[in-house]
Length: 289
Image (cartoon, rainbow, N blue to C red; front, side):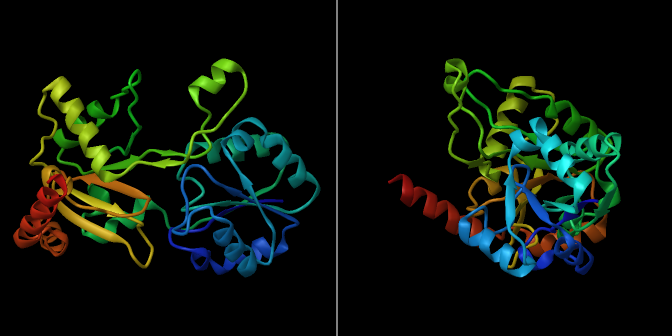
């Protein structure tokens, strides 16, 4: 049996009772470690916390293992019970759908145990989930690679009055271009996109196309460490959110579409108040000096 188990968004305690029971049945436990992470990251202390609660040693499965050497995991699952742990919900990333299909083709029995994900947890800000359009991913720009296919999707959502969830880039154990050219992989330090970087890139693309899909006055909601005890949720214009320090990862951003009065009332609880804005602006000026 291959158990694919969602861990939720906060910490080791967010696993469901059903998920925990399944983990304790398994001979090997893998944890996907590149599409998301729990609030304590991937430190040795964080892993030991998981292992202590779950009662099993955990093997980190990076992108290479899952996408290139998935047969290793699946062959183990043909002979014994194997758990594959995923932060959030198992189907929050297409990689995991591919793993399920490959398992089924090999005749491996798969059981999926769901959990909360960013796709539904963003509802905490009051924007109603059925009023969201297509979700987009914002990748890190480089000097030579500045993909902007998300722009058309955001534009389409906003024309329909729908909100847009923007998932921000995570780069964990990514080989450097230079090392690939040399034929020997060397990995870049982990990078997690902040809301501030995402907004800067979004505004750059709007300036490029100039089709008024959004602008610096467009209302957005920024989230950091969603689902954890110290989560931060702030609503404001893109310009205002650029002044906010959202702290440690993970971050995500919602570009607000047409709102219902009930949504507006709830959003007001998270709005950056004028006095807070002025204080942040003064802090920014002090830093510049």
